[in-house]
Image (cartoon, rainbow, N blue to C red; front, side, top):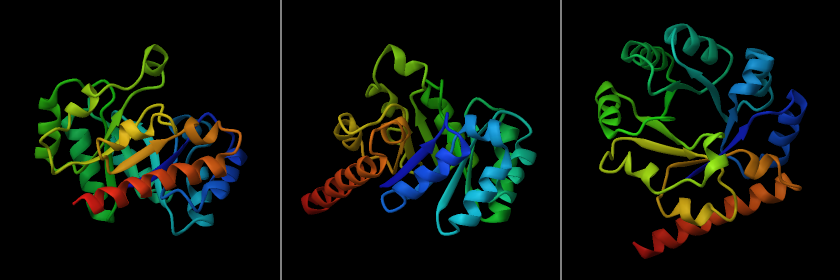
Length: 216
């Protein structure tokens, strides 16, 4: 499992500090939508220059103009960029083509999707990576439920990332669903010691995987 740190609602310098602090524990670096809106492609270029070996996710949340926005993110250094699942099929297909041409990846954000039929359509289009997303506003009224994971049930071709209020206390529940990537924002970035928290999270992930491997 990958541990993806989500950098959002932060200044550029806070982002750079957190990347350095959590470097040893995180696998993927997500530049959040709010950060991209504030700093544009320049922050992606800076992170790519300073951390050439890391996987960078640009959370563009593209809804339209997919070909342009995918190229924009990839040219700035992103390895993965995001598109909303409710976007037009043509938008998603255009982005998948740009990604294929550049040996990059598209992550489809499932925020607001409640019907597995859309997942089947995405898989048929060639989508290979999706994000189960329990949104920030949704978190105010409750915790992520098992229903969210039912969307990807019986769709083994999809690589699944999960995001939404994940922290150390909620981690065991999420791990039980065995996602491929855990996206954690404030569960790391808003903690008193982000470095220690990221290390503890990564340790729990590694421990779960080791026990799961032993069980098999």
